[in-house]
Image 1 (cartoon, rainbow, N blue to C red):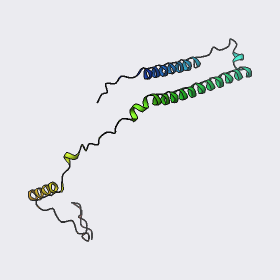
Image 2: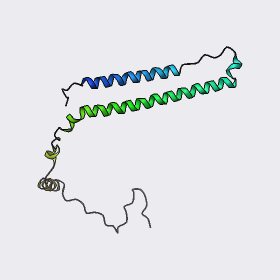
Image 3: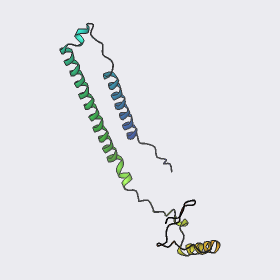
Image 4: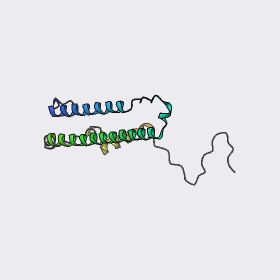
Length: 147
């Protein structure tokens, strides 16, 4: 069942802002992950001072990524809460859905089941008696009986 309601302008604005934030996050990740230029002298690349600078840059990038991720989570949470606050009362006041027993027409009554059982017994005869518990189990064909 399709609804003829169109999304509100506020919902569209939330989606646009969310997509813009997502695009900014992706652009930042691409920017932060780009390859760095190596210094012209190879021995400078392995100096302890250079390693400290690289570790500081890595720590800075991880911290910024964490802050951006937390801002995304907080912004998402706030958008959901604001959306529920603005759109929620309309949906909460709606009447509950009426219960419909969809399988009711396919259920058999006791009389119908008895009639079907009688009809089956008449067509096939009575069912065989269950095997006696004290009797030995049947042997597979081709094997001698156990003695």
